[in-house]
Amino acid sequence: MTKKNQFLFPIILVTSLFFLWAFLHNINPILIPHLRKALQLSDTQSSFIDISVSLAYFVIAIPAGLFMHRYGYKKGIVFGLILYAVGALLFIPAASARNYPFFLSAIFIIASGATFLETVANPYISILGDKETSEQRLNFAQSFNGVGAFLAPIIGGQFILSGIEHSDKDLQLMSPEQLNSYLQYEADTVKIPYMIIAAVVLLLIVLFIFTRLPEVQADDSELEGHATEFSARVLRHRHLSMAVMAQLFYVGAQVGIGSFFIRYSKFVADISEKDAAFIWGSVAMVGFMLGRFVGTFLMRYIKPGRLLSIYAAVSIVLLIVSVSIKGPAAVYALAATPFFMSIMFPTIFALGIKGLGEETKIASSFLVMAIIGGAIAPVAMGFISDRTGSIQTAYVVPLFCFLIILYFGLKGHKIVHHESDN
Image 1 (cartoon, rainbow, N blue to C red):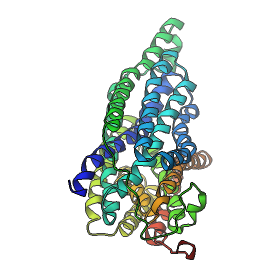
Image 2 (cartoon, rainbow, N blue to C red; image 1 turned 90 degrees about the vertical axis):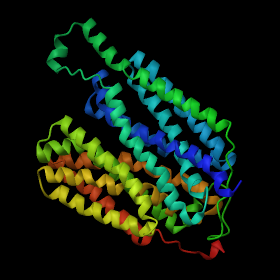
Image 3 (cartoon, rainbow, N blue to C red; image 1 turned 120 degrees about the vertical axis):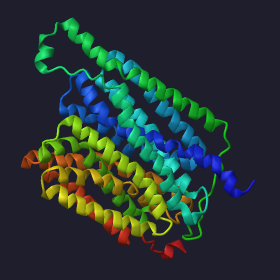
Image 4 (cartoon, rainbow, N blue to C red; image 1 turned 90 degrees about the horizontal axis):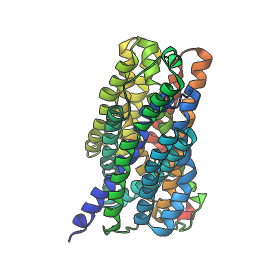
């Protein structure tokens, strides 16, 4: 069996994992309004769902890196899948109890599993084959992340959202028994979807246990003298520390743009919530999915750092339009940004771990921790919106984020050799 054929099935199997954490992140726009209704939450309380996910990534990334560093890629994947399945199953008692902290705990556990999977799968895919095509290979795998981003809102909207909407006045007119029955019905709609999710993940666990995955060693040829123990010293590599910063700002931009899109559309173009949600799903998320495939193709001809810079520059132009004008054109300019954001996470990741050898596993933890940006940027946007009365003005936050990514694509990703590495 050739080396290429030896890697084929493991690459296919590991690529399937990219769908799982995409589903986690992109089901949140469905869960947030659904649990807000079912559990009678305030807007602030419902935002804790995003915080639970981001916090899990921040807290669990280093333990995931330590686990992977000690036990290898395969065990890291299996353990991550177990956490994911446990968290999904916990949705069932959480719904029965209609208990929000229980839901948040379940989401935190699912996100912890996704953190393991992302910490393991990104570097594993990047070194599972020819190092010269690592960025292209990672972007191809991340294309299935785009498929998850596209399907999650559709599946969630179909099977979780009931379509029943009562006004506050309607709820006040219900008897306590009627209200309790209605709220329980709403909470229970998550049970079957999350049972199915758990079943699929359990099947993946079995496949990974009985599949032989090569424990590939990263190539140390570019930088030598790497430490083999977990240490923040890995951040001495400038291209990695810059990648961590770029990743933090990218995730912040991604989450911020999506989280406030419906409110933004109403503010600048008086577009209804349903129509705005349709634009987000059919234009923005389809664009995100297609952008991954297009970006993977373009990397055959354009160096990853240069393509990242081009995409960041286009995103900056689109954000300038979005914060400067009103009307449908502003909405569609904002909806176009996910196409250009599509390659950013995997490309920043691959460029950040380039040439790190055994330190690749540790570096991966820091890059995944940067997902905490998804909890920071939206808060900044909300603060600006509250102070100025304009959600449109708040979009200067992702605009600034793209400036940081542009710098990384132009200069920040370049490897600097240190004497201590020789």
